[in-house]
Image (tube, rainbow, N blue to C red):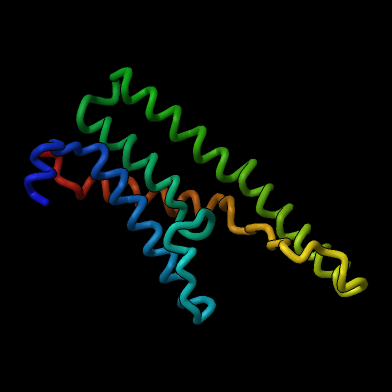
Length: 154
């Protein structure tokens, strides 16, 4: 593993971002386990939930770039704007999509109770965990910032 890392080089920004994403997914899985008393492996890789892994990743990348090349750099400006778009999208479009999926699933269950042949036999419920509340985005952002400050810059 060390040879592979030496060959690839140590990329502080990448390590911080990936570590933040992984940390958020693990925390999300434990929160789900505690809340619902069941292990759901989809929570390790899936979208939605607390904390937002997308927010953790982009905030870790943003802080890492700022620490590496400065807050007045073009690179920081680009990553910062990217982070804003990702977090806005998570709270907006993706959250609305998840809420719509939840309502469509309820409607399909209702109509299937009325007529057992209503749904195609191959139909799968729509994924409801897609977006985030502002609190979930904030949790991910804080996690990403913290991890970016902890990971060594080298």
